[in-house]
Image 1 (cartoon, helix red, strand yellow):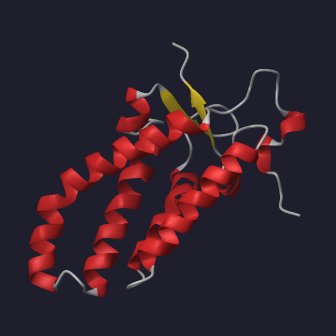
Image 2: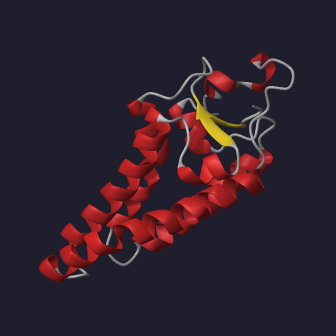
Length: 156
């Protein structure tokens, strides 16, 4: 049995349920598009210099994606997609997550480094996250539990 983390449903105050799956999915989709567009010049220049299929190129791409999500969640509590959909990532105390927690929450993107199977592994993780969110009473994905974070709707 896995540790339920700081957001164990029995310990949560009434109404302290995390954000639903669909707004979270849409925010992640928006963020993915933003990151791809923003990274395009960087990865194009790097890809030309390193070779688009190189492991160095894969590392650079994965690190940039993790950096975007981790830094935005740490310093803003929200990515651009979450801002648009009025969601935020919070620590157990309700504040912004630490950099360590935000990196842990988004570390699965590093699977993209693995040649050939990285993309399939990432797809499998996305499906697993969706399943764990939809099956959780608190709408927590395994990455939320692992990092000790929660995504909530912004009310104000």
